Length: 69
Image (cartoon, rainbow, N blue to C red; front, side, top):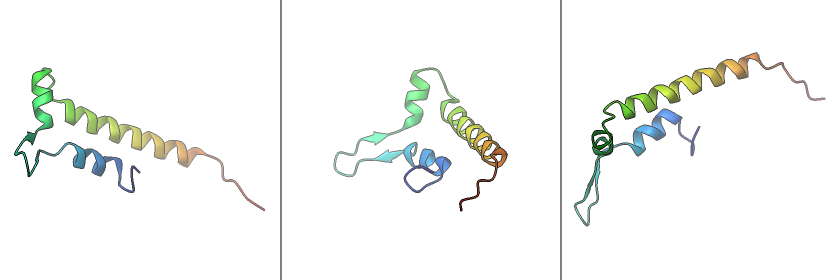
């Protein structure tokens, strides 16, 4: 969780195409990917987040149960 959202939700929110209302400037994260010749950047980022999430669940499930008395 990041700021109360799942990591995928957070990434999707941050990597949206947005336009600043006052200036009209458009922020398109795909522009960076194109400029750096990495068209799969956002997809690869999401795949990494999914991989880390799956590994985290596996680690948490493998932890021993702790009993507090």
